[in-house]
Length: 494
Ligand SMILES: Cc1cc2nc3c(=O)[nH]c(=O)nc-3n(C[C@H](O)[C@H](O)[C@H](O)COP(=O)(O)OP(=O)(O)OC[C@H]3O[C@@H](n4cnc5c(N)ncnc54)[C@H](O)[C@@H]3O)c2cc1C
Image (cartoon, rainbow, N blue to C red; front, side):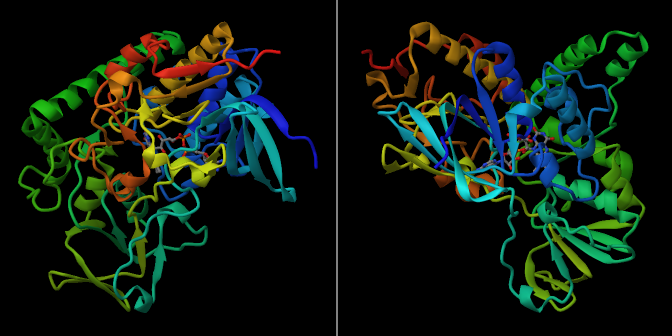
């Protein structure tokens, strides 16, 4: 049996979080050895897995991009542009030598006596798994299963004679030219797919059970363009435009809680701009919940509404009664004919990368743990998970947690500690516990379906899973590592 490969920090996943994490480690903890294990054949995560027509970001890249690597394109970017950006980050930081592709982590076992994690890893070159050991495990595996999307079971699916496609597994050979297509769902994926396909199809219908809020705006940032015209350095433009966008987003988030009606009207105006002042927004574009309880779907340059205005796309708001041989029968009695049905129905949440976690012979029940700042978990030693923001770009939190982990690792070195475990203190014992995300705050289907699998959060710091970038960006850099919630231990001497 070959010797396990050992590193100080092992990163799982080469998506935006894992690649960013490696950059933070190289810069802020230069003496730590690290490696990234990635199950796919290349980097990118979300932006590699999804290959459907039009695939693009929903966030602007000034904030979805890393704080240390300027973004120089239009705010909303295609997956291809994001992969190019990430490729440059890998090259500029010489990260290639630290990444092992085709390496899927299967088991992770913590041993208190060995004071390290042992990982069993499936690799492309061998039927025998390879073993890695590490001091610290940095989970950058995202939050959903990459191998398959979520498709509900509808009656009659087996009698449908056309093709059913989930956007997460887009077939290379799918020919939708002059075809009638129904897209089930109205989230960001549907809003991206429909305008990208509409010109080629005979017609595309967006079938939704309930409406989504859409944010329609130009895919352009005037301030960025002006600063570029003035030949301001890219680093400055990145920082200035980031701050401006964050300020604007903070204002929209605040208003969506304090003045939801005003935010609704602003969003509706964006739709009317393309569909006309007299367009009847109900029932297709008038959600029953307040804005931001689910992610707002961006419609850059109004492309979805342009496809509707051109008659190439339409919306049906209805319940599916049954699939038929050639389409979908709706509860209202209407029948939608379809050569192809696309189920833009979301993800399967995947907790900790489908890895079997064991801590000293005990299988880990993640749902029984309590979150330390939404990043570490009671009873799990030397482990951090990057779970980003819902209302702001994911990468903002990946960067903040990268800084936090590096500060923690350096603090441990200063203290001579090699193990850290979050643990409730005596003052936390009566604290009420809540789900990872409170449904009244944010409640998309993929989270609500699997919320019982996720850790709990407490009512006060440091046990709250803070989903507010503007608060956390101030609090996290100053978080007291010695408030007793993190229990540090040193290796035995002698
Ligand atoms: C279509 C789509 C569009 C999105 N758009 C936005 C957006 O505009 N803005 C935003 O903020 N968020 C967006 N999101 C959310 C998005 O997932 C995150 O923003 C971000 O890309 C997540 O990055 P990540 O690196 O944490 O995880 P991922 O991108 O999910 O990457 C995780 C990586 O870990 C690997 N991995 C998982 N398990 C294992 C294992 N056991 N062993 C080895 N490797 C493993 C996976 O193969 C994958 O490469 C979008 C999501 C989707 C699906």
